[in-house]
Length: 170
Image 1 (cartoon, helix red, strand yellow):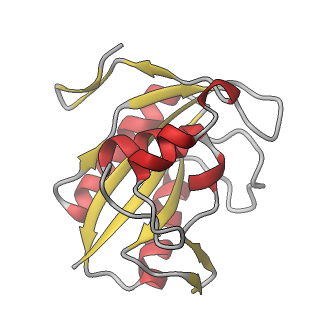
Image 2 (cartoon, helix red, strand yellow):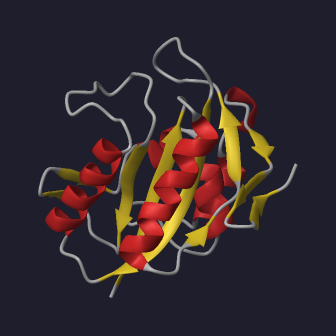
């Protein structure tokens, strides 16, 4: 089994889209490990704020199949096949890490660069896997978050209830 961390985000029908994404991921993987949910401004384009979180899963799926299944989930929940990187979306699921794999495999860049660049990725990842090490830097996610310029990208933890489970509280 490989531990995989996924970034989950939405800025269209945010609550419903995140819940639908979690339902689909739970159906695919079973038990999920969940970070808190954060509200953050759109980065890279003018748009509505996003809800973002990180989901941890254990899988035996090869990376290419995992990427394909995640695209199918996104498409089934309203993401256009030709969606551009910096655009509004109902559901966005990014593979952040796939075990300790480094490089470009099956078109997936690992680890995902946004881990070190965006608070909406690093903070929930540091919360979910504080002692796990970034595959390239070898530094724990908690340490990376402490060193991050947190004031540069404000995040707000939000209450989110999924299947009667509170994922995060303000």
